[in-house]
Length: 103
Image 1 (spheres, helix red, strand yellow):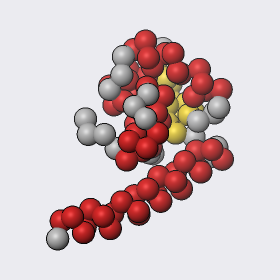
Image 2 (image 1 turned 180 degrees about the vertical axis):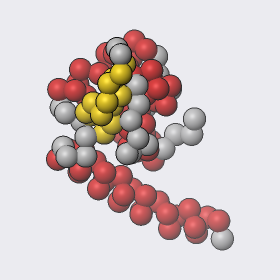
Image 3 (image 1 turned 90 degrees about the vertical axis):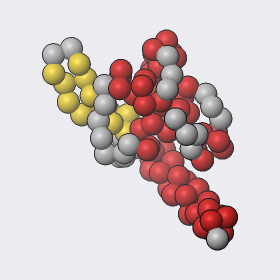
């Protein structure tokens, strides 16, 4: 998995990787197992940080079937909105550099 600008800037911690996985796949819902795989972290690391994601309301449940819950980024949360704006600024600032290198 290629390291994103978000991870390069904020560090390679499991919490940052989880947030990055949700941001990179915005609008899609995932089980905890799928998020663990997308973030490239261990199950223990996921569960260590999951309560923080829920307590800050950065994620929300989209649907449930059986014992499985699916989660997505909570775009109604002000912190999430700010993170998404910041992510766009990172992309905008890095794009000219990528184009210049390609020339």
